Amino acid sequence: MKVKMILPALTEATSPFWRPIKYSLFPPLGLATLAGYLQENDDVTLQDEHVEKLDLDDVPDLVIIQAYITSAYRAYELADHYRRKGAHVCLGGLHVTSLPDEAARHADTIFLGPGEDTWPAFLADYRAGHPGRVYRSVSRTLTGLPRIRRDLIKRHLYLVPNSIVVSRGCPHVCDFCYKEAFFKGGKSFYTQAVDDVLAEIERLPGRHLYFLDDHLFGNARFAAALFGGMRGMGRLWQAAGTVKSVLAPGLLEKAAECGLRSLFVGFETLNAANLKEQHKHQNLNRNYTAAIRRLHDLGVMVNASFVFGMDSDDDAVFDRAVEWAISRGIETATFHILTPYPGTALHQRIESQGRILHNNWDLYDTRHVVFRPARLTPEALEAGYWHAYDQFYRWRSILRGAVAKENWSGRLRHFAYAAGWKKFEPMWDWVIRVKRVTYMLPLLESILAGLDAYPTEEGGVKTESPLGAA
Image 1 (cartoon, one colour):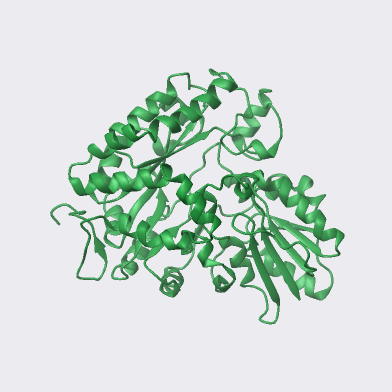
Image 2 (cartoon, helix red, strand yellow):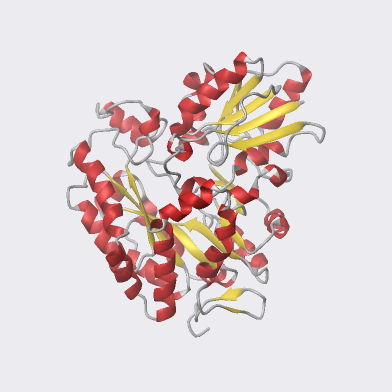
């Protein structure tokens, strides 16, 4: 059987003029995971349109397309193309689960929710000659997963080829998040067995890892066992966690000891009323500054996430967030415009209030305003978003953030990391075009390790006194 797996791209990612590095960070791990269920004699091709031009002249028997909201129209275009060629086309992913009727018009089979139970069931039906139209996930477990088909991933096209996902979902329920819609009908947070994760890590070459889990620290017992097992592996890794998990005693230390060097943290807003409105209770009454200090004391850099456009936000929100982040030495920040994704509680609320402006999914990218804000005009919200990025990543701001560190090692590390992401975009554009992105990985590893890094007795890497006097 000839199988084609496709991750469609946004228009921006295939632009002949500019290709941001964010589209060349991670390979399509979800599709590579599904490929592990195929038989050895199946002829499988996996293409990621973010990093390569698609071959549309082939004639596969089975086509699987993963659709996000901002690539939905492109996914439908590709699905229609292969259906005209006689292929059996499958569509799955976040957007398909949120709007199944829309997706079903372009597919022979759609998948709702995660695919660990539905994908093997479909394959059995397809090989028996009676594939279904809709497969809805109900059984949630990561036990017995086949090996990810990393041989299908073109490693040289990605800065972070060693991405890994060891859980599904998140234990929290925020109004603006897709999670509840995607995992409807079953568990919305569950993990792999620790031994299986450690075996997967052992198979990955090099030092660097990036955990793409929504919340790696979400199950404290699992995370503690994982971090204990990773000690001595000599890894440098990045992940995402919450303010609450950062402030919890003990677990963050274990993470830093086994190589955590950068954490994505969803601060989202400095306004308590906004947190309550979005049901982001895990951030309420938490000391954000203490969380940042705790990470920095352990040698962990911070990628802070902020969302603009919540109902209590006014014109002052942009400068307030930027100044707060710079003054606390946050290395990198990711800003978003609040976006009411279909299927979320936020979308239901905004739609019931008649505030949705349109359903052009291409613009539901957290960079465009698609609803009427409460205390801002759409134009002011969008302009403020771009203003925040401009102000945070100015040379003066990067220097101010670096100076907030206590020593020169931390200052130089901050400067190199922040400037590397945003002040050298022409260089990244060139590296992407000549398909040498992975050649930059040693530089990333050096910055993550810290300029004064030295090996621990267990073989890991420790920055200048990351654990204090311990």
